[in-house]
Length: 137
Image (cartoon, rainbow, N blue to C red):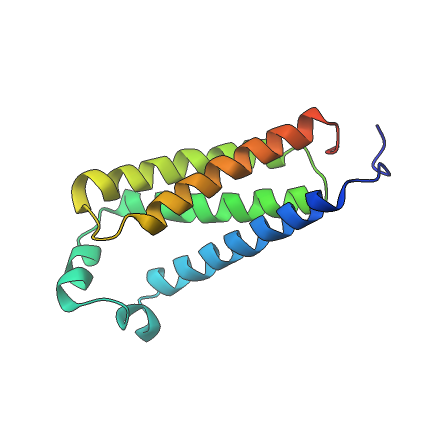
């Protein structure tokens, strides 16, 4: 199929949602990585100490997860097949990061980590579905 294939409107809605979700993830990553006042104001002193003791590989997994998810969303917007491997890389990084959070940190609220995991899986399946429909070139 050519790149001129008319896509259903829901494709653009879902892709727009993932672009916004992942842009917020990138923003949150930079806020945490730069240890801004906005970031510090969200946590108690004890929580900030726990975050400061987080291994470097967890922050790297966080960076890979949000950057690859954001890139996958952009690639879906421009209809490129490379969105699928980017979404897969993002999911692997999310699993690594959330594995650490669930088994070592044990967060008080599990809602956001579960949402992050669900949306990463959703992005992977959506990109795979789009690829199988030949919507991506």
